[in-house]
Every structure is written in structure tokens, then in C-alpha cells.
Image (spheres, helix red, strand yellow):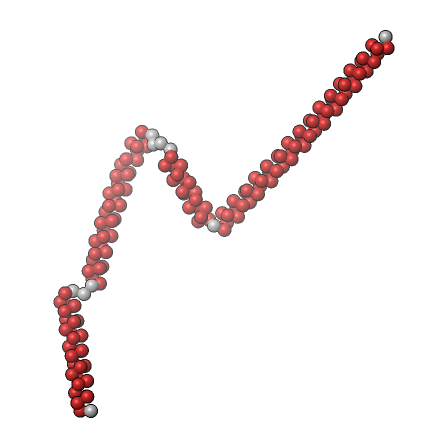
Length: 148
């Protein structure tokens, strides 16, 4: 009969040991989860702070990065039939406007270049004047050397 009394005691002891181990494991898991959550929160806070600092110090770089990212995402996404129908007329208008602007810029550039260069007659006259001045200076120098 004494064996029957010790069996429940042994079982109770084993159950208590299992409960203690489970409780310890639960606390360790809870502590690890809280620690991981705190580290994640700190990392998110630090990332937000760095992003805020970057935006304050280099807003144009952030804007350029955002535009580049948007362009990449837009290029990677396939066009829908609706977008094609809607944007086709706009694309044609933009293309025509860009071509007209390029033509105008080319024409204005040619005009300015032509205006900056002397005409043939003007260039001939300038060369005549320069040559005449050189000849006159040489003549005067020769006369001075003879008189001299």
C-alpha cells in the first residue's frame, strides 16, 4: 500500500517539474519576444530619424530618388488597354510639341550663328583693312629706317 501512496507523490513531483519548466520556457519566450519587439521598435525609430534627417539635409536628392523609383515602378508595370487608349492622344501631342520645339531651337541656333559670323563681304573688307594697315606700317618703318 505504501507503494500506492508514493506513486501519486512521484507523479505530482513530475507534474510540478514539468509545470516549472513550462513556466520558465514561457517566461524566457516572453522575455525574448519583448526584447525582439523593443529592438524592432528601436530600429524603426532609428530608420525614421535617419530618413527625416536625410529629407531635411537633401530634399532634392530625396525628390530625385522618389521620381526615379516611380519611373522604374511605372516602367515595370504593364500598360492596360485603358491606359493605352487614354494616353495615346497625349503621347502624340507631346511628340508633336517636342518635335516643334526641337525645330524651333535648331532654327534659332542657326540664325544666331549666322548673325555672329561676319558676312563674306564684311570679312573681305576686314582682311583688306588689316592687309592695308600691315603694308602701311611696313612702309612707314622702311621710310623711318632710311631717314634714320
